[in-house]
Length: 199
Image (cartoon, rainbow, N blue to C red):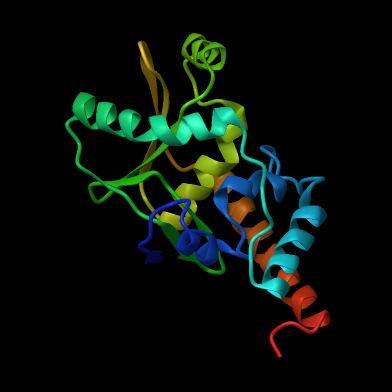
């Protein structure tokens, strides 16, 4: 694994992940059941386009997303206080043609993924007390890319207790994910070359 040290959300970070399948979008490649996603082709074409023009496609950022960025540092500090763990922020982790942007490396074995959802969503997460299905592919993808033994998923909303869920590698799902990623990356390279890229 190669770590590109840059602050997430900066031009350097966007450049590092431009045209690269990333864990936050692995749900567009594979479903939670290990089958190809219906969004696969559209995501493939987006990444080919990014490689061809050398810049990422502009994405919409709403108020909740902006708020989440601001609260992420608070959530990280609270997690470190609760657990006594020491964390290291990283930019982008690359492995075998795909990558991930974990919200922190913890010690030698762990990583964290922080979400700062709306109040109602956070309360729902607390009541369910398990990893939200929407983040299954991302968390397993983060573990696959980094090779770490565990991931702590953190949901944070100021004034309400945080949710911290320990996630470990699902070997069967990761085997399917790795196989789909290998096929996807080969197809990505071939489509890029077909349209004149890399010359």
